[in-house]
Each structure stands twice: as C-alpha cells, then as structure tokens.
Image (cartoon, rainbow, N blue to C red; front, side, top):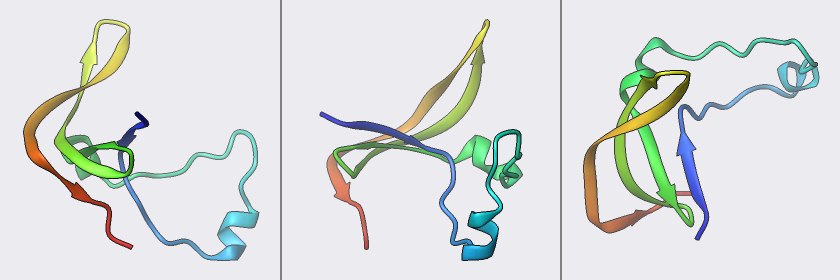
Length: 73
C-alpha cells in the first residue's frame, strides 16, 4: 500500500513552478501543522497534527476513518 502524508495542496502558476531551484523555500500556511492528511492509495484515512519526536517529526492522529474517503479530482 502507498502511504502519503499531505501537508498542503495548492495551485501555482507555471511561472512560479519554473522558478523552482535548489535552495528555494516554499512557504506553507501556518495552519498546516494542525491539518495533516494521511492517505493510503490516494484515499483519506486519517487527519492529524505535525509533532516533534525528539530529533524527527511525526503525525499525531486525531481522526481515523473506518471507511476511507476517496480523493476528489
């Protein structure tokens, strides 16, 4: 199974995409810390919050769905 941890999705222009380069920082909305999606094979399985675990990051699950929600689009 394919596991995804999704912080944020956004539409961007081709011009902005063309400006991607090593060292470029992509800003994220502050609320993404509290609204992390966990997807399995493209389906929403859970939502949670980004947390610090000693020297690494993790996701604390707040809601886990019994029936996975298919990804729209």
